[in-house]
Length: 350
Image (cartoon, rainbow, N blue to C red; front, side, top):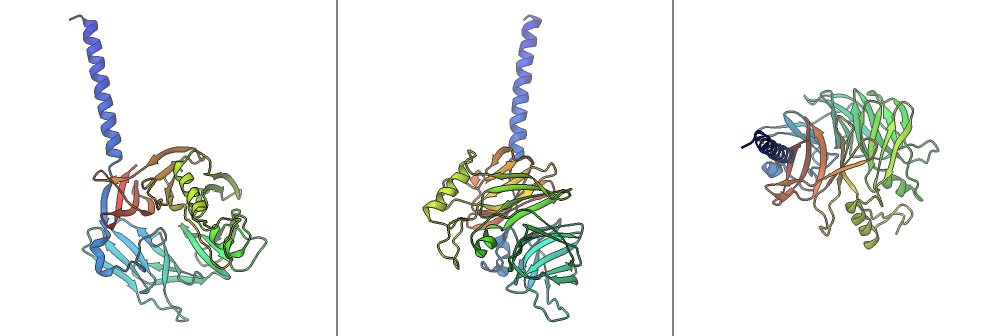
């Protein structure tokens, strides 16, 4: 055999080996692990009041925390389900009831929004109230992000103000520092409250977000207070968004300029989970389609809004069902989704 033929055979062998390694590495990156089975905590479970969702769950190194406004406490479950801790019986000076609904965590402290959507509590891990304050004229709060003691809150106010913005920024002591972000224009106050519900995260001087009931992602510069991305996801070749828009029309769901009744709003959620990675890439969990025209899907975008890829999570070669939580944590992409009639926390290294 000539040396030239040997070289060709070695090159082919090396190429095949490289391809196999690439496939193996790609598959490894897409393996989802079952981190926590919520059925293991069934004795604490109340489907209507301890339901895991974007606003009620916090992941830490050792515990999964879930707020329970019905029983006035925060539950902490170890990942092996062998240890449970409760933060409860919190007392305030004016006997304000502690009913935590929205839950966030930063610098070893919990930040909760009370069920009345007006009071913010700061609590240490031992269960002591560090501080609490009231947000004046709050109608509803959905998005909460805390970074180094600065609170970014998606507050919609009861009073109509010309200077209303999408995000209100507070100090740890409750002082209002700033407001940023434009609102979706609606014809009624109820439309303003619902359609301007957002999920978001902060990295450096940038605030990334997505509207719950409108297929739009955005990025704001916190220093200049200017948007650097405002991208409507409709008519962009994203099948999942198109399917949900079809459902809006099919089921006559309310839209920004179309309300069936000013006191009853019938909406379809587009975004069930949202977060960003260290590079500022955006992960957008699509709400499951009621007719199962597409599986659980996460859309990944660059920080500039360029569509990068779809992630359709599976476990044991079965699609993970209806998902309602997404978080980047410990260099992993985490979701809570349905599997064999139970909710599980699944994780994938990205």
